[in-house]
Amino acid sequence: ETVLTQSPGILSLSPGERATLFCRASQSVSSNFLAWYQQKPGQAPTLLIYGASKRATGIPDRFSGTGSGTEFTLAINRLEPEDSAVYYCQQKGGSPLYTFGQGTKLEI
Amino acid sequence: QVQLQESGPGLVEPSATLSLICSVSGDSISGNFWSWVRQSPGRGLEWIGYIYSSGATNYNPSLNSRVSMSVDASQNHFSLNLNSVTAADAAVYYCARLHFSSSEEFDPWGPGILVTVSS
Image (cartoon, rainbow over all chains, first blue to last red):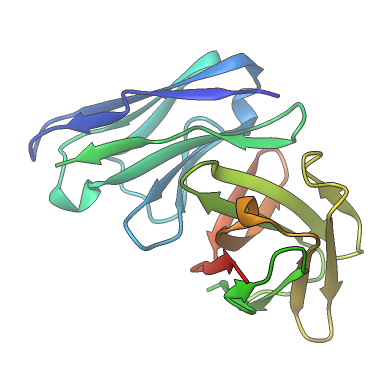
């Protein structure tokens, strides 16, 4: 199983600052198959980034994804209060076919 | 705009079968991959499996012996059955479309349905 470890567990920042969230895989992940999701309380996850760096439809360019191999990063520029959420990375590969990280809680 | 909606009982007895339906609007079941994901405080987000419109499936090996999925193109919905449930199966269950091309990700998701396991 490919285990995704996210850090930090909790990130507290102020509006206007930049957030950097990390996702480390226990084995190499194809960049095509790394995605990031945002989940607000009481809601389902929504897709932010796919293919490690491609923004999903309607996602502002304040959100960006980078990385390859076992290290991936989600950056959020110019933080807004509505960015408060839990962020998850997800990969495809191995068994089970899809796994998720444990999440990073972002507090603005 | 594609929308998914889970439905089914919110309470299942231990050892019984959990049965959920995901109704799809704004897109056709045909030609797409559809998936179930569950979320619990103890397990986080856990992929359960996917089904293609042809009926081909791929399940999480940890659940493989207890899970089955089916698709009903005439109703434009797909279903999840999980048998012999225990308290460990209590979770919010989400259905989602699985984009299956050069990349593979879940988008969109249904709002989720909370399933409790109790007698």
